[in-house]
Image (cartoon, rainbow, N blue to C red; front, side, top):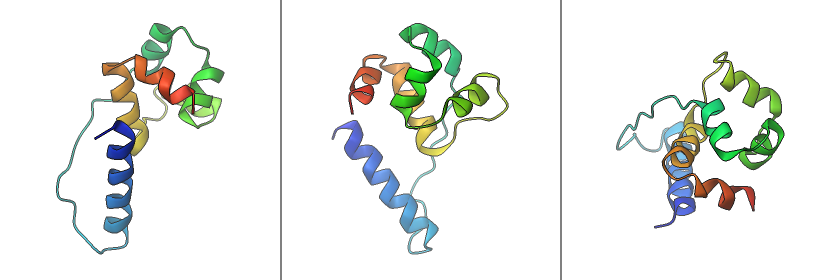
Length: 94
């Protein structure tokens, strides 16, 4: 199963849970990613990172300054990028 299939399945499950049609079968906690360190390792700007993540530069800045923590799907994507930096290139190409 590809990462995109896993993310899609997770999103569909989240919708079902939100609608009250099902209960969470498992709960996965991800360590809060160090977004600045990830971005520095990738040698990309905040704008490039925000574009690839599908979010705003302000959100990236908030994550980097720890004013906000990435949650949900963003946290999972960041954990994936942290474990497999080449995934960022795949993400950025879409």
